[in-house]
Image 1 (cartoon, helix red, strand yellow):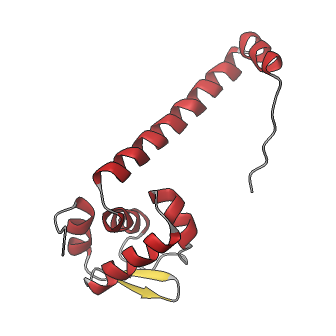
Image 2 (spheres, rainbow, N blue to C red; image 1 turned 90 degrees about the horizontal axis):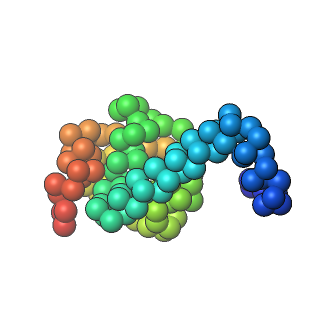
Length: 124
């Protein structure tokens, strides 16, 4: 769980005005957050859950088994539910693109996984 502290608005505004380096760091932080949210929105809008799961696997795997998958964590990263991730991973396994082993994923057919991730195999 992330530690969260609320700061009085007046203090934050004063600090922003008095410390340009701090203000710039805040701007960079907010820009990165906005970029992440925009990217996630594009992914959720343009790709199915199965395609997003394939894209996640491709980002995390270089053809070898990855660290154990935490489906709730993946779900939050790709904008779906844990159940949606489970269904998507099973669909990728049924298609022959990956193999699930005790919470780990092994890429079996990278070209197929890339096609799925790109949306070329919708409905299959």
